[in-house]
Image (cartoon, rainbow, N blue to C red; front, top):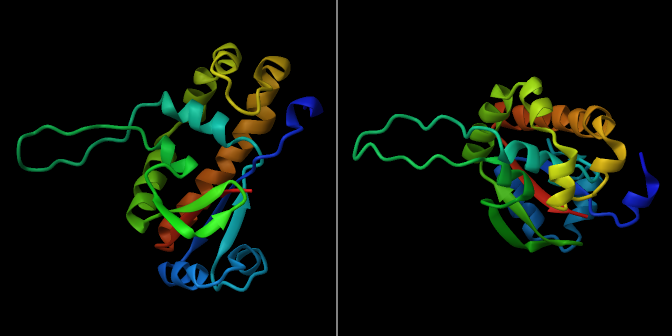
Length: 183
């Protein structure tokens, strides 16, 4: 990978925690130390390095998850769940300040929906969506797409997407929330 493209570091970080742990973290001014120090029972933390924006860009072009059948007008808004991976749509946790803003908490329901959607996405669909030129034009961070070409997808985005999908699935199975924050 081109080291010049990685000078500035903004790392997407995810923590799967039980709902009660969020309350505990809110009352701890050193919540990041507690989380990374293994002081939160059943918590697990991963980071995507700088791949979050690339993954979100790829997923934003994927079909939204199917809308569950409901009674009523029959009108249902279908939208991508990809922004959840950047914390958009989660509850802003103002007391959980991270280096690049407050953490967002995804509810257990959001985690379940996200897990179901991510598990339905075929790698071949992501590969077909990968477009270094369009990503460069859209200024998708970390802006390595043109220089790295297909390797940026195969060696960088795909492994991190697979790790994230497994992480979210584990959180969904354990009925955990997910904190999304940037360090």
